[in-house]
Image (cartoon, rainbow, N blue to C red; front, side, top):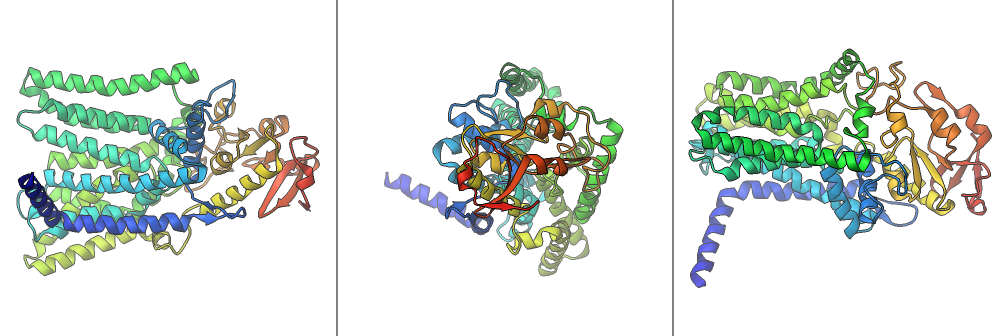
Length: 545
């Protein structure tokens, strides 16, 4: 027993000595992430501390809460027609565990904390990927004095704000990056192995399967990995069988979720697919997507150009394989017609791979100009800081916690509105919203989604391409360009309405006759006049329109 303890202690010491730098960086990142989470929290008018996820993540939280409390995987409990208004099944299931274990406020905190794990896990696995494909794995990259070379990608990933933001704000971005890098690492290990253990390719298929459950469009990444492994088939029948077994395993994830979707929601594709893609002409989508992606290419231009230079200087199929993931994510973003937020959530999961290729390129460029250690390290650090600053410049104030995270002020306003609605309305009240996340999550009332993420009728409407629901270089914003306020407001008459104008439809004039604007604590609300579902005795302040 004493000998075993001695051996274990020795192994721990060796591990700590070898990995002290990334462990220190992990602790520092964890400290920053906790400060970020606290910075994004707030004490509301009811005196309680609320934590914050991005609004779309809070939509998934409402699905998770309902599932955890026996109401089904639905946005509105008791709805006759179930709607799959999420695109991140696995993340939603994780959220259901959090909402089962904690109350609504601390379930949000639990999800934010998972973002720390996913980001650090992605950074660690990206370093391992680098060790498998770079010359530094065999030479000075693994030596004790090459920490800067070995862990530069680790540092860059932890400093890339969009990945951190989406991970800590509860979106599936961090989870997808984690499973994506895990699958890539396993695919490289399998390709390099002489005896090709079956566990490696099956674990790879499982990782990409979990990535599929995280976000279905990760199918394109899995296809890229299976294409990368095609050359292994020439080594014999056993490799063919393993390849086919991995394909069957991955297909089981796709078929399993599709079968669940069909029998539970009555659809083959999620409602969000209909909402964002159906009805929008391909040429229109491509124009919108290109207009959206251009600022991203400009922000990451320095990283991208250096990475491409490195790919040219020291070409390998493995490096091209990694670059393929980044390229596919950019092309996919163009294909779907852009996004509603210019914080690059679609590209963020593959940015660690671009940062890794950038690091390799920096090593090789610097080596060509100097063999002096300190000069090389200085040049390496300077080039990295410059390129990353260009990519992160727009987010620096948020990263330094000088500004609130993106849209955090809206989340605070929605929490205040939720507190007021819970106090003023009865259980049969309905709420009509454009922002389908924070407010509906904290208000246990039937909700009406004006923009159709959880409404099949709205999702099936033709998109507004007038330019009135546009932004970020797009003429029409996916997921926010389908609406029918005549139906959602004038016909359904929600007890509470968030706003009355969107795109080309303006109902504010009509609303003055049917709704009253009130102030309750720190919230200003539009409430249906004379509604029996409102405790009017508590309404003390009527505001002018």
